[in-house]
Image (cartoon, rainbow, N blue to C red):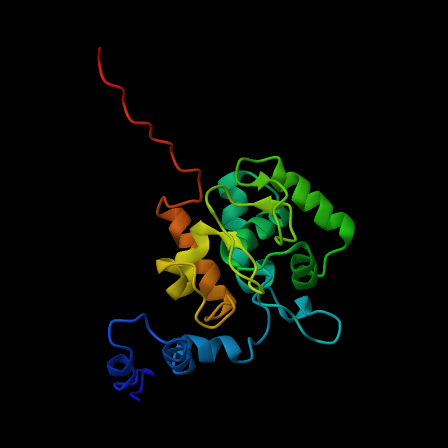
Length: 211
């Protein structure tokens, strides 16, 4: 196995078959981004006073890991920063369930309801009920119903998680960030900056023959 986690013998063993799950695991184990994701995130960018009770905090909260993106998103869409926080979570996180967003932000139920209501009133999201989603707000566009125990998620997010871009198979049996949350937020927001924001695909109907 080389320094990047590639085993020269495994491709020979599998022939023309898709890569073994163990190949993805080996590459991930040697990936510096994954090592950084597992490391101590340090203090919140917004300041050491932004830690939760007990001195911990969740990097999945963009208000503390990428506050500059929260401010930029709020300004771009004309929404409050709380609504921008939820929007960024929907953009980048594979599991922004209602319970997870509450855990990551440590907001009160009333504050969460207000932020969700503000975001739901925009065209940035759609409000719906979807099986196993455990949330009510979604990015517009296609939906991927992955097998249990992996939560389903929006198709727009698939390229953010490597091997999922080519299909719906999850080599590791779970979809999780394999880089620091701040880096994942920056990649997702850069796609928006580049004009690749989530949207419904245009339905193209074949033209009928002229009579």
